[in-house]
Length: 138
Image (tube, rainbow, N blue to C red):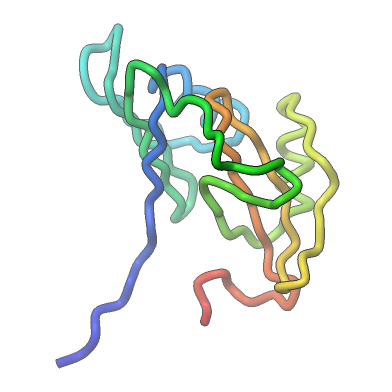
């Protein structure tokens, strides 16, 4: 019997306002496919998709809250990592939508990255393999 292929991984981020968060991902980060679940005036869940990347946004009364165990952002910790083919083009796209990011950083593990912090404080990193491999490749 053949081993199953893994097709992706979807982070589930706990947010205070799924609709508002979904609109940030759509309008600022360019995730065109947005699904909202629950009452139209107060959805409790959202899915945002762009290409083969998707993120679940789940309502919680308190949001994710403070994360005292997370050190300074310089430690390069993140909540979601999305592989892309062109970080510079994505950064320019974000800038055209009014979102400034730091310049791309080349990491010692072979990735060129930019990071974005969403309205709930989640850090989403977009990474491009410097060697041109897909992030999905071993």
